Image (tube, rainbow, N blue to C red; front, side, top):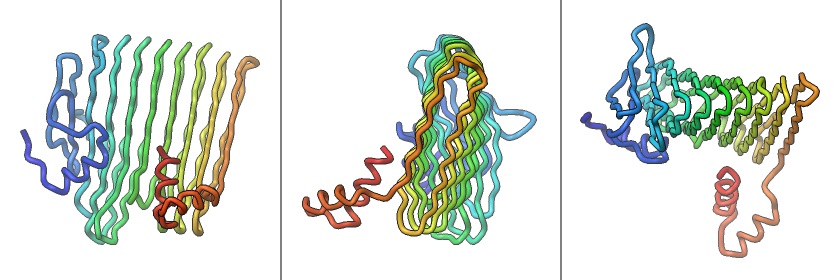
Length: 308
């Protein structure tokens, strides 16, 4: 068992909602290399030989297991690019818990680009959780640019739950989902920016299969002078249903641009989009103030409940 230092342990607490442990199926990537990993009877993790990253093989006999694959970057000036592929067999039921935390105490930028591809077999049910977090007293930026591609076969179910907690100076998220017949997708994206941070999220959902459906919910809070751009796009190519909902709270001198796009390429494609950007409700603030909370504390409570 590898010994984990205090900084790494603290970051892991922020990005792994279930609590990272060196047991079961796991892979901890630390400063550009795999520090430790483990397998189970039904889940095997192998390091790639041609480039940085891992291949995760999930047997169709998997029921209720978890895979933990956190990444920690704790040096200034590093650019870490990793390619992870997940092969989920027919009928598998699994939760994959990822996430990246950057601790930058130097003057150079630290960056992690995680390129993840999911091959989801028929009737499989996958939940993928990903948290991003930045910290450290250095002046160097903390940059996270995730790329996620999901290929879903017939009757597969995929739940994508992503969150950017705090401290990430720049992020550009690219997500592509290709859906087969009767496939079901559930996406929840939560994002917080502050100071001069910037965030861009592009999402292309291809509903190719008859009876496929997608629900995309994006919630964000922009503070300070931060900037956010959201562009979720649902492309219906068969009898399908999709709903895109983007809600943002804007504060201070922040800027938010929301561009939900629906593209029906079949007569039986039913796609809906909603978008709303606004400030914190003053009545909610007043009500919390009457309970003895300061304005700052009241704002924190409203933001936390909105994002969760």
